Each structure stands twice: as structure tokens, then as C-alpha cells.
Image (cartoon, rainbow, N blue to C red; front, side):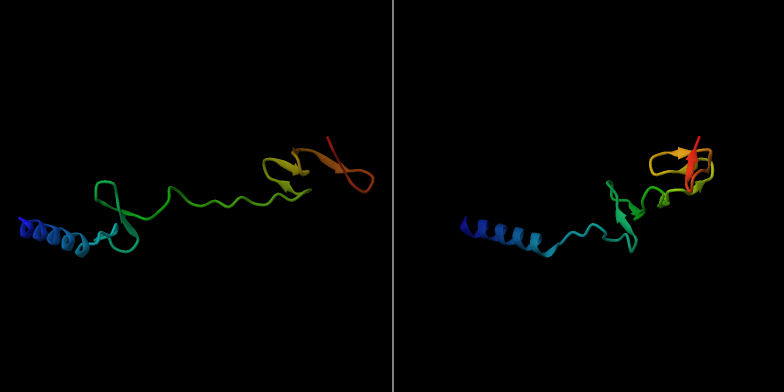
Length: 85
């Protein structure tokens, strides 16, 4: 009885130690295993878009001049500065 328990315990330990599981096994570089084992590419949903920095006093097409808080469509020079309508 003891020999049978020891033999089954030893067989179980050797199986768990000798078979490591890798998530990307067989998919190759740039791919990963999906939820059902199918290989999928390692990409995100869409292109990365970098937003431009807004500079005070610049004109932005379709929007107007940026004054730090909001866009103004019309501006003109007044007393060494700008006046917005």
C-alpha cells in the first residue's frame, strides 16, 4: 500500500515539474495565444494619435485662435495686444 502511494506521488511530482506551460508556445514572435488557443497578433486597436500642443495666440484651422481657455474666431490688434470679438 505504501509503495503504491509513493509511486503515484512520485509520478505526479515528475509530471508537474517536467512540463512547464508557456502562453506563447507555438505562436511565434509577435503573436500570443487567445482565449481558445488560437494565435493572435500582438497589436492594439488602432493607430496612436499624438495631440498637438496648444500655443496661446496661434490660429488653428477650423477652430480659431486659442487664448489659453477657449477658441476665438475673430481677433484684432488693440493697444499692443489682441482683442477678441
